[in-house]
Length: 159
Picture (cartoon, rainbow, N blue to C red):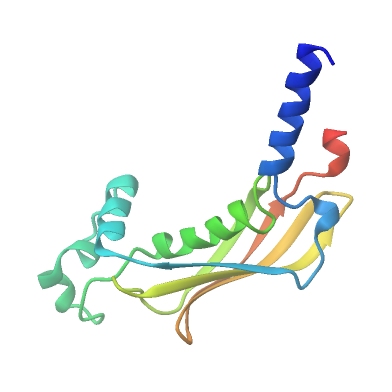
C-alpha cells in the first residue's frame, strides 16, 4: 500500500472513530443523557465567556433579595448541557443544530446535579433531519424543557 493510501486509511479510521450516529442509524425513541454537577466556578466562567454578569448569578447579597433567595446558574449554562448530549452522544459528532426551543421552568443552583436528556421524536431520512425532545432535570424537578431540530450526516455523504 502506498504512503498516500495508508494516510487515507488512517484518516478514514479516525473519522469513523470520532463520528456519531448517521441519520440512517436513528429511530424515534432513541435517547441519551449527560449529567453534571454545576459549580460556582462553572457559573463564574460562564459569565466570563458569555458576558452575562447579571448579579442574580454572581452577587449573593443581590440575589438573596430576589424571589429566588440565592444566586442561580444562567439558564443558558443549564441548556448548554443539552448541546453536550447532542454533540457528543445523540446524534453525536457531525450533527449540526438547526434550532432549539427552550422553556426554563425552575432555577439551578451551584451544587445541583443537572441531567440533560435528548430523545429522538422524528427522523427525516430524505432531508437528513432529526427532531428531539430535550429536557434538563435536577432530581425529580424539570428545570428546562424544549425541542431541537438537527441536520445529521448520511453515510452516503462519506462514500
